[in-house]
Image (cartoon, rainbow, N blue to C red; front, side, top):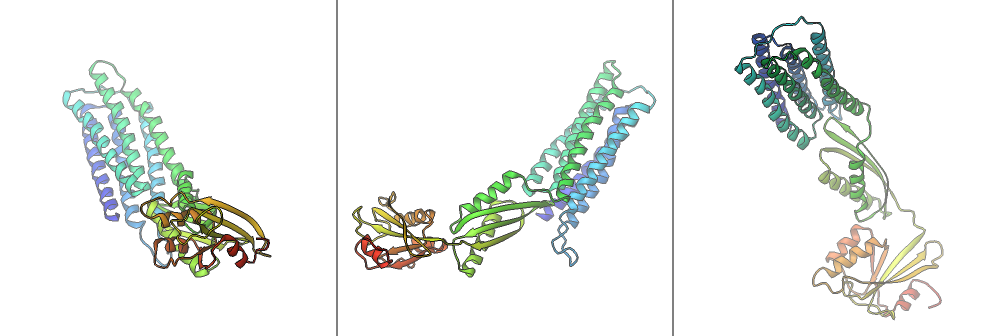
Length: 394
């Protein structure tokens, strides 16, 4: 990826040099003030392209002084480009207001040359923006926007030269019309670059996507907070989560799995820091597979018609809740046990009491990943299970 970005920086520099040479030649031959102003803009672009190339080369370097990398060099570069755009707008406006009026030559080859100054940056800006979005590079996005501005200004120049050929002297007006578009482009880039340098938050859509990835993960009880920032084209994230486990080794392993899941879904995530804590248990939820609503314990997890959900107080073992849930997966041809296990995990179950051994089977991995303990029982009825758990009155 880095080689691609550096290559794009070289391409941008070459395109800008070509445009400057072409515009200067056309301006000298035609005497067009608008063309001279546009050439000034493109001349400034050369320095911008050099800055982009330098930023792309330097940004990935890591040293002892900068152990987290120099990614923000790209954002510094985008700010430099923004300032250069604003300066170019000032120069164009000054020339339009103060330069002496001169006659514009409008030969057909001049129009063809100006048309080329529109077509080249138009095609290249589309290509560069596509690469910029694929790599999430702020400096390439800045360059692509700058080329889009050049398309607009060159289009105005083309109209001015064409109008001169028809006898309408709007060359000076055309030069002035270029200024507000360039100013807006420069201002937008300046604001975007400053937001990153000041560690502004990631956009709400990305943060919501990260939160969704973690909330859907087995073993995560609650996502307390998610914050993030950009640094160059890379993303840094930090999250606080509540896990359904008291085992520190298990919690650490789960946090690493979350990091890999986020990096697999979100583009250019450089680092994810997850602060985790075990869930403070005030109660424990037990589940028992049943053959019927009368409370007969089923010998199979996936084939069970119902599941008894029993919640006991963590303080004194008192019965807090008893509920019977139908098993919607019992008639599946395949993976009925796996789907049942996923359903139980979604219910926040702590302990599964079963007659069959689940070791080495798909459901056991789902349950273990979510921190659900599996225990064998010889009980034949739900009442016997409750008695084993110390619940009176059944």
